[in-house]
Length: 107
Image 1: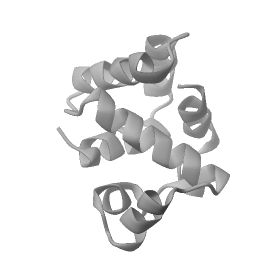
Image 2: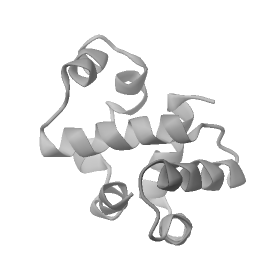
Image 3: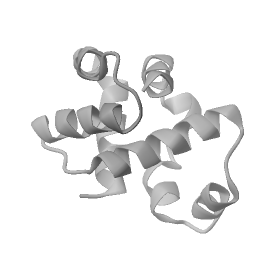
Image 4: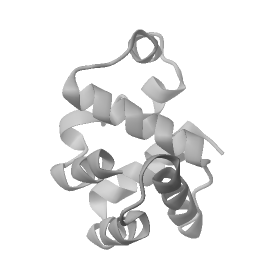
């Protein structure tokens, strides 16, 4: 289980439209940790091992990064090479893609 696994799964989402549809269906009207658990379950189905908490942490990071509202902790993680920054800093933002970005904002 790891942040890196969430990042790898999310990267795959940017490249796989059918997986994006699976994610939309899995999350549905769920919110918060219930939605994050659905993401973790879908990730597991596709061979990725991460917790709902890790999924939520990456989701919060991506949404905050896109809105320009990173917390001090998130800024430090990126600047200091923390696990989130190392795992997703290289491709978050414009590389994430509009379809996946909208999924993050919904969940």
